[in-house]
Length: 201
Image (cartoon, rainbow, N blue to C red; front, side):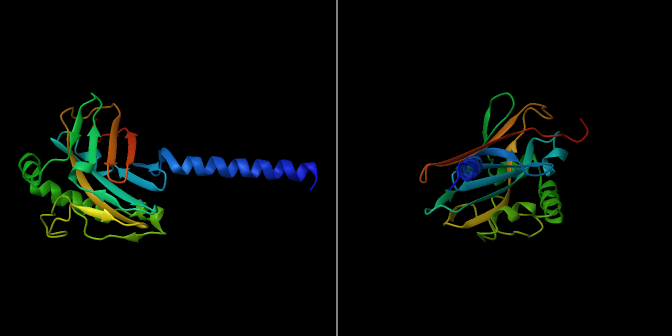
């Protein structure tokens, strides 16, 4: 093998190594309103498209995909997600009762309808995974979904897509939000910072 071949091989190996590092951790933009965050072989997508229209509401909706290809199980429930707002306050997702009282069933149904009509670009990231249907932390008032499935165990090579809500005390803030997923059982943490381009601001 000549010197040039060795140099090219080394360069190629270095590029592969950089690619692996880039896909194993950190976050990046995936679409106009979506970002993906990674932690080893687990990944989460957050899309704030529908949230853009809810800046004056007490709660904001976020569309989320979560999946992994690790040889272990991810555990997901209501306590798994937090949203840090631009003022630094950490919020947990509200109960169904709190959401319906402060936001209303009409808006929840409209949010579900909005994300249903949008292209499901996030699932393209999980082509090697099996989808887990019916994951819903909030029942849709129009009956789709009509039940809650808010505790999820994700075996290797599975993913789900769902809608979650968080309090919105700052209104149309131009600062940075950070969505975090934490599973102490599998020691998995994913964080995604993003800004929301509010409609009407």
